[in-house]
Image 1 (cartoon, chains in turn yellow, cyan):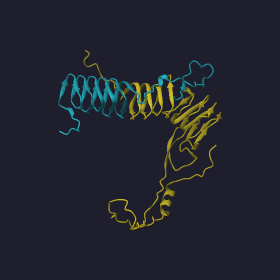
Image 2 (cartoon, chains in turn cyan, green):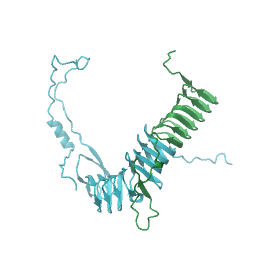
Image 3 (cartoon, rainbow over the protein chains, first blue to last red):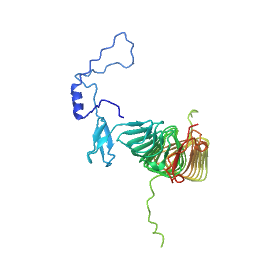
Image 4 (cartoon, one colour):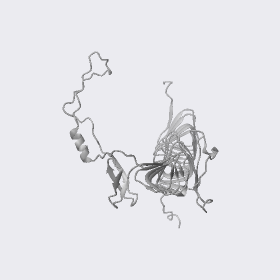
Amino acid sequence: MPKNRKVNTLDSYATIRAVAHAKPAPKSKTPAPDAPASTDAPSSEPQKLGARVARTALPVKHHIECYECNYKFQMHGRATSSSCPKCRTLLDLADHTIDGEWVETVKTAGTIRIAPTGVVKSGNLIASEIILEGILEGGRVRALHVLELGAGAIFSEKNVTAPDLRIAAGAEFKFKQEVKYRNVEIAGMLRAKLTATGVVTVKPGGSLEGEVQAEHLIVEDGGGLKAKARIGPKPEPTPEDDDQS
Amino acid sequence: MDNNTVPQSVISKDVEITGTIKSSGSIRVDGKLDGELHSTGDAVIGPSAQIKGNIVVNSATIEGAVQGNVTAKDRIEMKSTARVTGDIRAKRLSVEDGVTFIGRSEVNPSGSPITGVAPVVTAVAEEEGERADAATVRSFARR
Protein backbone atom coordinates (compact mmCIF):
# COMPACT_ATOMS: atom_id res chain seq x y z
CA MET A 1 0.00 0.00 0.00
CA PRO A 2 1.29 3.44 -0.73
CA LYS A 3 2.31 5.52 2.18
CA ASN A 4 0.06 8.26 3.38
CA ARG A 5 2.26 11.06 2.18
CA LYS A 6 1.47 14.65 1.59
CA VAL A 7 1.24 15.38 -2.09
CA ASN A 8 3.43 18.24 -3.13
CA THR A 9 2.53 19.58 -6.51
CA LEU A 10 4.86 22.04 -8.07
CA ASP A 11 3.50 23.59 -11.17
CA SER A 12 4.30 26.84 -12.91
CA TYR A 13 1.96 28.82 -10.74
CA ALA A 14 3.52 27.47 -7.57
CA THR A 15 6.94 28.34 -8.88
CA ILE A 16 6.02 31.92 -9.67
CA ARG A 17 4.34 32.27 -6.31
CA ALA A 18 7.41 30.90 -4.55
CA VAL A 19 9.62 33.36 -6.34
CA ALA A 20 7.26 36.23 -5.51
CA HIS A 21 7.24 35.33 -1.83
CA ALA A 22 10.96 34.80 -1.64
CA LYS A 23 12.46 37.19 0.82
CA PRO A 24 15.61 39.04 -0.06
CA ALA A 25 18.69 37.44 1.32
CA PRO A 26 19.99 39.03 4.49
CA LYS A 27 22.99 41.19 4.05
CA SER A 28 26.14 39.32 4.72
CA LYS A 29 27.78 40.48 7.84
CA THR A 30 31.28 41.71 7.55
CA PRO A 31 33.72 39.39 9.25
CA ALA A 32 35.28 40.42 12.49
CA PRO A 33 38.54 42.19 12.07
CA ASP A 34 40.33 39.69 14.29
CA ALA A 35 38.95 36.71 12.39
CA PRO A 36 41.58 34.68 10.58
CA ALA A 37 41.73 35.34 6.91
CA SER A 38 40.42 32.31 5.07
CA THR A 39 41.82 33.26 1.71
CA ASP A 40 44.77 35.20 0.58
CA ALA A 41 42.84 37.04 -2.07
CA PRO A 42 41.54 40.42 -1.00
CA SER A 43 37.78 40.50 -0.57
CA SER A 44 37.23 43.36 -2.90
CA GLU A 45 34.14 41.93 -4.57
CA PRO A 46 31.40 44.50 -4.83
CA GLN A 47 28.36 43.82 -2.72
CA LYS A 48 25.31 42.96 -4.75
CA LEU A 49 22.57 45.37 -3.98
CA GLY A 50 18.87 44.83 -4.09
CA ALA A 51 16.74 41.82 -3.45
CA ARG A 52 17.80 38.49 -4.78
CA VAL A 53 16.08 35.20 -4.71
CA ALA A 54 17.83 32.97 -2.24
CA ARG A 55 16.05 29.83 -3.22
CA THR A 56 14.29 28.98 -6.42
CA ALA A 57 11.75 26.26 -6.74
CA LEU A 58 12.00 24.48 -10.04
CA PRO A 59 9.42 21.85 -10.82
CA VAL A 60 10.86 18.49 -11.63
CA LYS A 61 9.89 16.94 -14.91
CA HIS A 62 8.75 13.37 -14.86
CA HIS A 63 8.59 11.30 -18.01
CA ILE A 64 5.58 9.07 -17.80
CA GLU A 65 4.48 6.34 -20.12
CA CYS A 66 0.93 5.11 -19.95
CA TYR A 67 0.91 1.41 -19.23
CA GLU A 68 -2.33 0.97 -21.12
CA CYS A 69 -1.73 2.77 -24.40
CA ASN A 70 2.05 3.42 -24.14
CA TYR A 71 1.51 7.13 -24.68
CA LYS A 72 4.45 9.11 -23.38
CA PHE A 73 4.05 12.46 -21.74
CA GLN A 74 5.70 14.71 -19.20
CA MET A 75 4.39 15.84 -15.88
CA HIS A 76 5.78 18.48 -13.60
CA GLY A 77 6.04 17.95 -9.91
CA ARG A 78 5.24 14.94 -7.85
CA ALA A 79 1.95 13.11 -7.64
CA THR A 80 0.76 9.64 -6.82
CA SER A 81 -1.73 9.48 -9.64
CA SER A 82 -2.59 11.12 -12.89
CA SER A 83 -4.61 10.45 -15.96
CA CYS A 84 -3.33 9.64 -19.38
CA PRO A 85 -3.96 12.54 -21.78
CA LYS A 86 -4.65 10.10 -24.56
CA CYS A 87 -6.70 7.23 -23.20
CA ARG A 88 -7.86 8.94 -19.99
CA THR A 89 -6.83 6.00 -17.87
CA LEU A 90 -6.24 6.84 -14.26
CA LEU A 91 -2.58 6.09 -13.85
CA ASP A 92 -0.92 5.04 -10.64
CA LEU A 93 2.38 6.84 -10.29
CA ALA A 94 3.38 5.51 -6.91
CA ASP A 95 6.28 3.23 -6.17
CA HIS A 96 5.58 -0.19 -4.72
CA THR A 97 7.67 -2.72 -2.87
CA ILE A 98 6.82 -6.40 -2.70
CA ASP A 99 8.50 -8.02 0.26
CA GLY A 100 6.30 -11.07 0.74
CA GLU A 101 4.16 -13.44 -1.23
CA TRP A 102 2.24 -11.70 -3.97
CA VAL A 103 -0.47 -12.95 -6.29
CA GLU A 104 -2.16 -9.83 -7.63
CA THR A 105 -1.64 -7.62 -10.63
CA VAL A 106 0.04 -4.27 -10.11
CA LYS A 107 0.20 -1.54 -12.70
CA THR A 108 2.06 1.64 -12.04
CA ALA A 109 4.01 4.22 -13.94
CA GLY A 110 6.44 4.32 -11.07
CA THR A 111 8.76 1.65 -9.76
CA ILE A 112 8.05 -1.83 -8.48
CA ARG A 113 10.71 -3.37 -6.34
CA ILE A 114 10.56 -7.04 -5.57
CA ALA A 115 12.63 -7.25 -2.45
CA PRO A 116 14.86 -10.23 -1.67
CA THR A 117 12.09 -11.58 0.55
CA GLY A 118 9.45 -11.06 -2.11
CA VAL A 119 7.93 -14.00 -3.94
CA VAL A 120 5.62 -13.35 -6.84
CA LYS A 121 3.32 -16.30 -7.28
CA SER A 122 1.08 -14.95 -10.02
CA GLY A 123 -0.27 -11.76 -11.49
CA ASN A 124 1.16 -9.24 -13.86
CA LEU A 125 3.55 -6.59 -12.71
CA ILE A 126 3.76 -3.60 -15.01
CA ALA A 127 5.85 -0.59 -14.12
CA SER A 128 8.15 1.95 -15.59
CA GLU A 129 11.05 0.46 -13.71
CA ILE A 130 11.15 -2.93 -12.09
CA ILE A 131 13.82 -3.94 -9.63
CA LEU A 132 13.89 -7.68 -9.25
CA GLU A 133 15.77 -8.93 -6.25
CA GLY A 134 13.41 -11.68 -5.15
CA ILE A 135 11.77 -14.68 -6.70
CA LEU A 136 9.43 -14.64 -9.64
CA GLU A 137 7.69 -17.99 -9.44
CA GLY A 138 4.75 -17.11 -11.62
CA GLY A 139 3.12 -14.26 -13.34
CA ARG A 140 4.74 -11.86 -15.70
CA VAL A 141 6.85 -8.80 -15.31
CA ARG A 142 6.85 -6.02 -17.87
CA ALA A 143 9.05 -3.01 -17.40
CA LEU A 144 8.25 -0.09 -19.63
CA HIS A 145 11.77 1.24 -19.33
CA VAL A 146 14.30 -0.58 -17.21
CA LEU A 147 14.47 -3.99 -15.64
CA GLU A 148 17.09 -4.14 -12.95
CA LEU A 149 18.28 -7.54 -11.83
CA GLY A 150 19.74 -7.62 -8.39
CA ALA A 151 21.64 -10.29 -6.58
CA GLY A 152 19.36 -13.12 -5.59
CA ALA A 153 16.83 -12.69 -8.37
CA ILE A 154 15.33 -15.93 -9.58
CA PHE A 155 13.10 -15.85 -12.60
CA SER A 156 12.34 -17.39 -15.91
CA GLU A 157 13.49 -15.36 -18.84
CA LYS A 158 10.27 -15.78 -20.76
CA ASN A 159 8.34 -14.13 -17.95
CA VAL A 160 10.15 -10.81 -18.06
CA THR A 161 10.14 -8.20 -20.78
CA ALA A 162 11.83 -4.83 -20.82
CA PRO A 163 13.55 -2.61 -23.35
CA ASP A 164 16.52 -1.88 -21.13
CA LEU A 165 18.40 -4.16 -18.80
CA ARG A 166 20.50 -3.29 -15.82
CA ILE A 167 22.61 -5.76 -13.88
CA ALA A 168 23.13 -4.45 -10.39
CA ALA A 169 26.47 -4.51 -8.67
CA GLY A 170 27.11 -7.81 -6.96
CA ALA A 171 24.68 -9.72 -9.13
CA GLU A 172 25.85 -12.51 -11.41
CA PHE A 173 23.67 -13.94 -14.14
CA LYS A 174 24.02 -16.42 -16.90
CA PHE A 175 21.54 -16.38 -19.72
CA LYS A 176 21.29 -19.60 -21.63
CA GLN A 177 19.59 -18.12 -24.65
CA GLU A 178 20.42 -15.10 -26.70
CA VAL A 179 19.13 -11.97 -25.08
CA LYS A 180 18.14 -8.85 -26.95
CA TYR A 181 17.74 -5.50 -25.32
CA ARG A 182 18.04 -1.87 -26.30
CA ASN A 183 20.43 -0.58 -23.67
CA VAL A 184 22.29 -2.75 -21.23
CA GLU A 185 24.14 -1.52 -18.19
CA ILE A 186 26.30 -4.01 -16.38
CA ALA A 187 27.56 -3.25 -12.93
CA GLY A 188 27.62 -6.90 -11.89
CA MET A 189 28.57 -9.90 -13.94
CA LEU A 190 26.73 -11.16 -16.98
CA ARG A 191 27.47 -14.11 -19.15
CA ALA A 192 25.30 -14.20 -22.21
CA LYS A 193 25.04 -13.94 -25.91
CA LEU A 194 23.92 -10.36 -25.96
CA THR A 195 22.53 -8.31 -28.78
CA ALA A 196 21.83 -4.67 -28.07
CA THR A 197 20.42 -2.08 -30.41
CA GLY A 198 21.56 0.76 -28.19
CA VAL A 199 24.45 1.11 -25.82
CA VAL A 200 26.13 -1.58 -23.80
CA THR A 201 27.83 -0.07 -20.78
CA VAL A 202 30.15 -2.02 -18.54
CA LYS A 203 30.57 -0.18 -15.29
CA PRO A 204 33.64 -0.36 -13.05
CA GLY A 205 33.52 -3.69 -11.30
CA GLY A 206 31.16 -5.10 -13.88
CA SER A 207 32.02 -7.80 -16.33
CA LEU A 208 30.55 -9.12 -19.53
CA GLU A 209 31.39 -12.57 -20.76
CA GLY A 210 30.20 -14.41 -23.82
CA GLU A 211 29.27 -12.68 -27.03
CA VAL A 212 28.18 -9.14 -27.59
CA GLN A 213 26.87 -7.44 -30.67
CA ALA A 214 25.96 -3.80 -30.41
CA GLU A 215 26.35 -0.52 -32.17
CA HIS A 216 27.76 1.21 -29.12
CA LEU A 217 29.94 -0.12 -26.37
CA ILE A 218 31.31 1.72 -23.39
CA VAL A 219 33.67 0.03 -21.01
CA GLU A 220 34.50 2.25 -18.13
CA ASP A 221 37.85 1.93 -16.46
CA GLY A 222 37.67 -1.10 -14.22
CA GLY A 223 35.09 -2.92 -16.27
CA GLY A 224 35.78 -6.36 -17.67
CA LEU A 225 35.06 -7.65 -21.14
CA LYS A 226 35.80 -11.23 -21.97
CA ALA A 227 33.75 -11.74 -25.03
CA LYS A 228 33.59 -12.13 -28.72
CA ALA A 229 32.56 -8.66 -29.73
CA ARG A 230 31.16 -7.02 -32.78
CA ILE A 231 30.83 -3.34 -32.05
CA GLY A 232 30.01 -0.74 -34.62
CA PRO A 233 27.40 0.35 -37.06
CA LYS A 234 25.59 -2.30 -38.96
CA PRO A 235 27.30 -3.05 -42.27
CA GLU A 236 25.41 -1.54 -45.13
CA PRO A 237 24.78 -3.68 -48.18
CA THR A 238 27.34 -2.70 -50.77
CA PRO A 239 26.90 -3.34 -54.48
CA GLU A 240 29.51 -5.88 -55.46
CA ASP A 241 28.39 -6.56 -58.95
CA ASP A 242 30.64 -3.94 -60.53
CA ASP A 243 33.66 -6.17 -60.98
CA GLN A 244 31.70 -9.32 -61.60
CA SER A 245 31.00 -9.51 -65.29
CA MET B 1 68.32 16.51 -22.50
CA ASP B 2 66.41 16.21 -19.31
CA ASN B 3 66.67 12.71 -17.90
CA ASN B 4 63.23 12.84 -16.35
CA THR B 5 61.36 13.17 -19.60
CA VAL B 6 60.67 9.94 -21.42
CA PRO B 7 61.64 10.22 -25.06
CA GLN B 8 58.84 9.41 -27.45
CA SER B 9 59.37 8.02 -30.88
CA VAL B 10 57.02 9.42 -33.43
CA ILE B 11 56.01 7.88 -36.71
CA SER B 12 54.51 10.89 -38.35
CA LYS B 13 51.55 11.08 -40.63
CA ASP B 14 53.46 10.97 -43.91
CA VAL B 15 55.59 7.97 -43.00
CA GLU B 16 54.84 4.49 -44.18
CA ILE B 17 56.76 1.56 -42.71
CA THR B 18 56.80 -2.06 -43.74
CA GLY B 19 58.37 -4.24 -41.11
CA THR B 20 58.57 -4.63 -37.37
CA ILE B 21 59.05 -1.74 -35.00
CA LYS B 22 60.72 -2.44 -31.70
CA SER B 23 60.94 0.29 -29.13
CA SER B 24 62.08 0.40 -25.54
CA GLY B 25 60.28 3.66 -24.89
CA SER B 26 56.95 5.14 -25.64
CA ILE B 27 55.95 5.55 -29.24
CA ARG B 28 53.35 7.43 -31.19
CA VAL B 29 52.19 6.27 -34.58
CA ASP B 30 50.37 8.60 -36.91
CA GLY B 31 51.43 7.02 -40.16
CA LYS B 32 51.03 3.66 -41.78
CA LEU B 33 52.58 0.52 -40.44
CA ASP B 34 52.45 -2.81 -42.23
CA GLY B 35 54.00 -5.00 -39.62
CA GLU B 36 54.24 -5.53 -35.92
CA LEU B 37 54.80 -3.04 -33.18
CA HIS B 38 56.62 -4.12 -30.03
CA SER B 39 57.27 -1.69 -27.27
CA THR B 40 57.99 -2.01 -23.58
CA GLY B 41 56.59 1.46 -23.12
CA ASP B 42 53.31 3.01 -24.01
CA ALA B 43 51.97 3.39 -27.50
CA VAL B 44 49.61 5.92 -28.94
CA ILE B 45 47.96 5.05 -32.20
CA GLY B 46 46.88 8.39 -33.58
CA PRO B 47 43.67 9.11 -35.44
CA SER B 48 45.39 9.00 -38.81
CA ALA B 49 47.32 5.83 -38.09
CA GLN B 50 46.73 2.63 -40.00
CA ILE B 51 48.37 -0.47 -38.63
CA LYS B 52 48.20 -3.90 -40.16
CA GLY B 53 49.85 -6.16 -37.69
CA ASN B 54 49.98 -7.16 -34.09
CA ILE B 55 50.73 -4.72 -31.32
CA VAL B 56 52.46 -5.75 -28.11
CA VAL B 57 52.99 -2.88 -25.70
CA ASN B 58 52.77 -1.94 -22.08
CA SER B 59 49.70 0.20 -22.61
CA ALA B 60 48.00 1.31 -25.76
CA THR B 61 45.84 4.27 -26.59
CA ILE B 62 44.11 3.65 -29.88
CA GLU B 63 42.52 6.39 -31.91
CA GLY B 64 43.14 5.09 -35.39
CA ALA B 65 42.71 1.89 -37.36
CA VAL B 66 44.29 -1.36 -36.31
CA GLN B 67 44.00 -4.67 -38.11
CA GLY B 68 45.65 -7.12 -35.82
CA ASN B 69 45.80 -8.30 -32.29
CA VAL B 70 46.53 -5.83 -29.54
CA THR B 71 48.18 -7.11 -26.39
CA ALA B 72 48.91 -4.73 -23.57
CA LYS B 73 50.56 -5.57 -20.32
CA ASP B 74 48.61 -2.97 -18.46
CA ARG B 75 45.88 -1.12 -20.25
CA ILE B 76 44.14 -0.58 -23.56
CA GLU B 77 42.26 2.62 -24.13
CA MET B 78 40.07 2.81 -27.20
CA LYS B 79 39.00 6.30 -28.11
CA SER B 80 35.83 7.07 -29.98
CA THR B 81 37.59 7.15 -33.35
CA ALA B 82 39.25 3.77 -32.91
CA ARG B 83 38.63 1.01 -35.41
CA VAL B 84 40.04 -2.29 -34.29
CA THR B 85 39.70 -5.57 -36.11
CA GLY B 86 41.42 -8.19 -34.06
CA ASP B 87 41.67 -9.57 -30.60
CA ILE B 88 42.59 -7.49 -27.60
CA ARG B 89 44.11 -8.63 -24.37
CA ALA B 90 44.95 -6.46 -21.40
CA LYS B 91 44.59 -6.11 -17.69
CA ARG B 92 42.40 -3.05 -17.94
CA LEU B 93 40.23 -1.71 -20.69
CA SER B 94 38.55 1.57 -21.41
CA VAL B 95 36.27 1.93 -24.40
CA GLU B 96 34.61 5.14 -25.46
CA ASP B 97 31.34 5.33 -27.26
CA GLY B 98 31.75 5.29 -31.01
CA VAL B 99 34.45 2.68 -31.44
CA THR B 100 34.34 -0.02 -34.03
CA PHE B 101 35.63 -3.27 -32.66
CA ILE B 102 35.40 -6.70 -34.17
CA GLY B 103 37.23 -9.40 -32.33
CA ARG B 104 37.67 -11.11 -29.05
CA SER B 105 38.38 -9.38 -25.81
CA GLU B 106 40.22 -10.83 -22.85
CA VAL B 107 39.99 -8.23 -20.15
CA ASN B 108 39.13 -9.13 -16.61
CA PRO B 109 40.41 -6.60 -14.11
CA SER B 110 39.07 -8.43 -11.10
CA GLY B 111 40.68 -11.68 -12.16
CA SER B 112 37.74 -13.73 -10.94
CA PRO B 113 36.09 -15.45 -13.87
CA ILE B 114 32.44 -16.34 -13.76
CA THR B 115 33.09 -19.79 -15.08
CA GLY B 116 34.16 -21.22 -11.78
CA VAL B 117 31.15 -20.10 -9.82
CA ALA B 118 28.79 -22.83 -8.79
CA PRO B 119 25.06 -22.18 -8.86
CA VAL B 120 23.51 -21.87 -5.45
CA VAL B 121 19.90 -21.57 -6.39
CA THR B 122 18.18 -22.55 -9.56
CA ALA B 123 15.20 -21.20 -11.31
CA VAL B 124 11.90 -22.37 -10.01
CA ALA B 125 9.57 -20.73 -12.45
CA GLU B 126 9.04 -23.58 -14.85
CA GLU B 127 5.49 -24.18 -15.79
CA GLU B 128 3.98 -27.53 -16.36
CA GLY B 129 5.14 -29.16 -19.53
CA GLU B 130 7.78 -26.60 -20.17
CA ARG B 131 10.26 -27.66 -17.61
CA ALA B 132 12.82 -28.87 -20.09
CA ASP B 133 12.49 -25.99 -22.52
CA ALA B 134 12.31 -23.17 -20.08
CA ALA B 135 14.95 -20.55 -20.57
CA THR B 136 15.99 -20.44 -17.01
CA VAL B 137 18.13 -17.81 -15.49
CA ARG B 138 20.20 -18.74 -12.54
CA SER B 139 21.46 -16.56 -9.87
CA PHE B 140 24.88 -17.10 -8.45
CA ALA B 141 26.13 -16.16 -5.08
CA ARG B 142 29.18 -14.02 -5.00
CA ARG B 143 32.08 -15.80 -3.42
